[in-house]
Image (cartoon, rainbow, N blue to C red; front, side):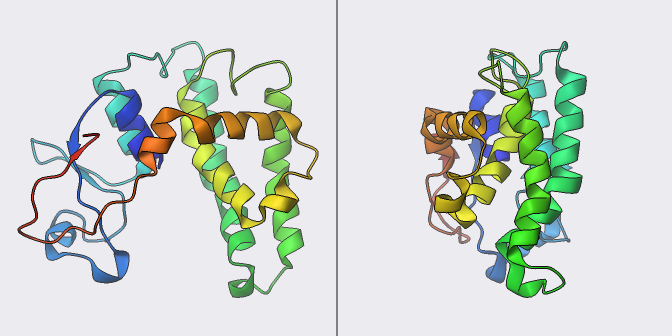
Length: 198
């Protein structure tokens, strides 16, 4: 999602090939042998193989909404780093607690909430994580907060994070997020070119 959000906020267009991970096409594995998504192949052959890097690549090409504001960029980078290296491991265990019996789902949720509490505090007097306009931190973190919330929406909306809930609701209704969530048919060789966004 954040790779797509980066492309949308950058107002770029890319050729999109939707992949089903249990049926990875040879063309994808040829450019990215580790076989994870998303992966971006640039016109010059350069391969960018992480959602965070694709998001940053897109915004480095064109940033009409000022998401890479130099004033907040160090803080944004640190927040995304914390999301990717700390929060995401608790999110994955919370989502798939049955695969990780070392702790209960509640304990995994509580570990993840340490990051949510931090976000809640950041949003106390601001519309967005780092100020009154969106930054790369918002689109870099939001898809993971959304996943966390969707493990059990009823529980999430009873947690004491009103600012975070408001912020998430704003993003879930954002036109770019709605566009990023559109599902496409899995790509097969010979398919007509699919441009995203259309």
